Image (cartoon, rainbow, N blue to C red; front, side):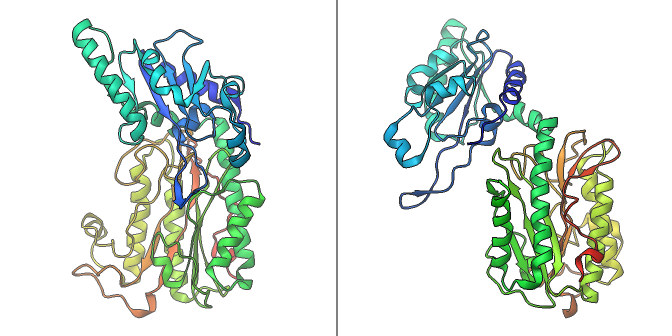
Length: 441
């Protein structure tokens, strides 16, 4: 059984409580989600709840009470011990475990939340809770909040607003601690090794599904929880479908195979890597020239991911190289500035160049590179993933060249996980090879 590092979570709670400044935060954990009939999906804890507690059971709620004295600030409501339920569904920590193993100042049964919550949050000047995400608990909180508003109008005391916890937690989670960076190194290393296994075994595989099994089996073998997201194993024209997950087509010689996959560790830290390799061991001349454009864009964008830059610049660096390269081979025409300003490249490159990475694959913060200018700081981890996808799915914009048949069905994306580190960004996923000389055999 995985036991989290208590000191890591204690430190996070201290920082979070300091930021609350007299507020009371209610952070619910995740619930089990029905898959079909009476079967549920594998449990996945809410990332904010996990980040502050390390408690990995469903139906739990954490209170962070900055208006209370020390020793009364961290309260957990959890499922109590129940022998019969544990026979069917597995071990529970219960109330004693929540206090002794997870350092809650006090633990209660989740069934007592409605009765005990009013007294716990009484005296806070504001409540901190994510509206719209937890309907059952939200109903309880809004009833309590309504009564506190009445008290405030009559007595001048009580909470006067509800704020989102993301205001505080996004800032905390965006900058990774050394502990988190090491966990991310492990997640990306396992993910990179799985991609290398695919590269080494590609000639013996006949179907996308076999590649998926190889990847995800390796994740489990190395002790990960499983895939961080639905693995994308896309051969040939399937690679031009950005979130293709059917993964059931045959592998044909002459086609490329795009694999976008990463593992999630037991404590939810994720890898996210994409590699595109020739199934037969050799790129065609058309495939090679597109691959070289994407690889050049990716390498240059990674070099730009430094502390005096911003997230928007990473995207723009990659985009400019992609557009210039596509112009050189006749798939775009006109000035680079005009093509970018009018988005005349969108039929060939329709997404941004990366996102933040951490406990969530699309981690907290304004992550769409190119939409927001977020200054890059040491400890941030982002993906850098330019691509080119050539098909008939999106019409060619007016004034742009028609696409010759020889290019169609080529879909290439190259993605690495990058730690911002002054002038030398660290490629965490470097063990997954990507040079043409490494991919051909």
